[in-house]
Image (cartoon, rainbow, N blue to C red; front, side, top):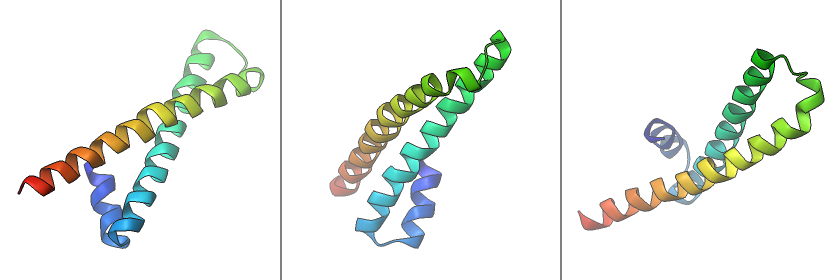
Length: 85
């Protein structure tokens, strides 16, 4: 997450960087979760096309839980550490 934050922080102002960081983090974790689910389906012999709805649901949950909540906690720690200095 640090590398993503550093990259986004170079491009946007601080307000835009926070929003862009969270959106990219959510989308990234959503794609990672869906990709892992597709690989598991392929490994177990299930039809990926038949499980698209399940993969999308898992991807959305992964994006929201890890992407949004994890990204928010990362930004909170970053802000808290910055304010203590």
